[in-house]
Image (cartoon, rainbow, N blue to C red; front, side):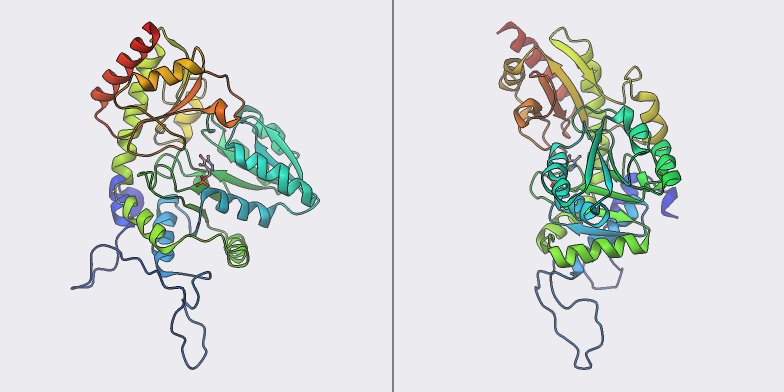
Length: 372
Ligand SMILES: *Cc1c(COP(=O)(O)O)cnc(C)c1O
């Protein structure tokens, strides 16, 4: 039934709680660390706050619904979710493939922690993911890749992994489940940061794992129990509260990103633009085949670092901040964090401002910055 609904309807319905007359329409956070125990010592749903929590469960049900998964598990951050999955899957002696052009701290975790545990870590760019996967036991793919926005052919990658018996994990942070559903394309697990567009207000850090294989999900849940990288109940509640408007916000973010990409491409101060929604983008054909929406991120290259700073200084709407997916349009010069990109490369995260206001502001700021 839910498959027939649009994404805003699905977002709103995902937040729904049982319609009992007199009960609150809005979810409530349950911040308890411990729960009353039954005298007969039978197993009960909640007993201790590191094991389970009613606020997680509501959020997990909503996230599973949006990802098209049987189940989801919440974590204290996107990295907590990703590293839990990697600890479960990447055993000593195995080979792990991670994106060379994806989120940089995943490569660091693999190099600094997993390699030291006897895991062979290999890297590949989005375009070479399928070839490289034929040598791996565990594959972590990210698409569109943050920050370069190249796209990985998920169906083809899933087929390669299946032939080899490798496990495919897809980081769905940049696309969000409203932009693509990796599980339906053959991924074994989805990992993501809910810090970005899903929560969307730049006011919390959270992550999740989604999947439909009971054994895999049970192993990840056990790692969460033992390692303890859990989400606070208030954050779980805030993410759930935000999910109701995720469809609406993401729609505007995608619209603003596309409009910005089109304008930037023809501006003389811009060296290059990547947005998978542009018909002539190298990733467009693939993106159009596997994505429902092309996302709120635009990758742009200006002349140098000074040009990126001048753009923000001359704008009334842009803010300089890292991370992405919030209501404000933000600019992040990625070389400052060590991403392998040119000094003038910036990742723009489209906010939910009126499209015409944003376009006018950014265009004027670019021109003023170029004249200054
Ligand atoms: C932000 C991000 C992460 C990490 O998420 P946190 O919530 O910051 O821990 C992982 N993958 C991608 C693609 C990201 O953008």
